[in-house]
Amino acid sequence: MLVMKRSVHTLWIMLSRCLDLSTYNMSLVWLLVAVNVIGSCSGEAALMRVYSPGDIIIGGLFPVHLKTNRNQKPGELTCTEFDFQRFLHTQVMIHTINQINQRTPRVLPNVTIGYDIYDTCGDVSLAIKATLRLLKSASDPHSCSTHSDFSQPQTKVVIGESSSEVSIAVARIVALAAVAQVFCGHPARSLQPEHV
Image 1 (cartoon, rainbow, N blue to C red):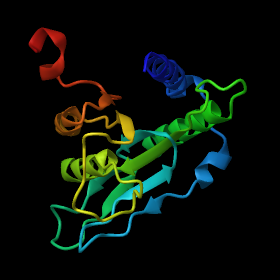
Image 2 (image 1 turned 120 degrees about the vertical axis):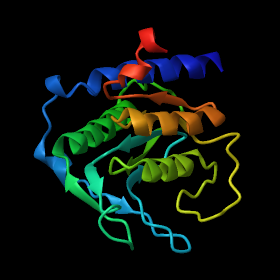
Image 3 (image 1 turned 90 degrees about the horizontal axis):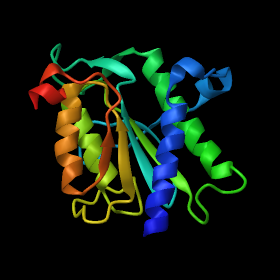
């Protein structure tokens, strides 16, 4: 268990270095990564995501689209206003995890890191739905099972969501499963140490 904690700590150091986009040149190849849309279960709205399997999954919640049509008209929820900068964040996360998995000598011997990244569209309800999907311990991430066990989720950490409002909602859910959350935005004044 101690080896696993050290390995996860090493992983976080590498991720934190690579998630700083100011020092990272993004190639056009990464712009061609396809984003899967999860098929809906019994009428649910689909979530946009990209997934790669692994022994340990790092979840990502990013507002790749900035708005939804929630206030405009009833019906199926759609996301609008593509944010290229947030899209680059997802690509850096994917690239970093792939580099960790392909590195020789292995950073995490006998362990493969996977990812499960969702577009939250900056919407609290979509972020909550994506978080619940991340915490499912089912081996099939496309499963529509309503019997989820959150005691041993495959996702060990959730990165992202730049909005304090959405991050607070996500934090309350991931805390139930003892999953770590890394907040990537600027905290609201009420979350700063002198106000807590």
